[in-house]
Image (cartoon, rainbow, N blue to C red):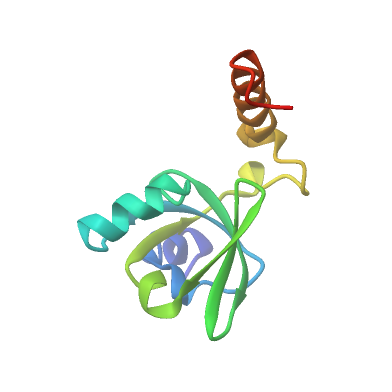
Amino acid sequence: MKNSEVSDQCALCPLNRVRAGLAVRIKKVCASSEVSRRLREISFCEDQVVKLLTSQTNIICLVCNARLAISAQLAQTILVEPVRASCTLPADDGAEFGVHERLHGLGAHVAERGEFR
């Protein structure tokens, strides 16, 4: 079996089956609507690239330069696909995902309203 055949067969799998250290893209969140809404609020949503840091009792992922822990049961409801080598996560700066721009924009917005001092 060729590598391309293997990757085609394993295109989607639950997050709890991914090996620690790998970057994956979330393709579908199959949790209840309330849980899915909450996950999306914290940027754990479709097309988001996440890096699995640990997969022991709890699943810890790096999402938008923040570490998020979820249960293995919840991770089972999140379907992911492997990320190609050209689309890997940045080291730690989050610049590739616009994290700094979003945070800077938020800070500027809050500063304009006089709430950030």
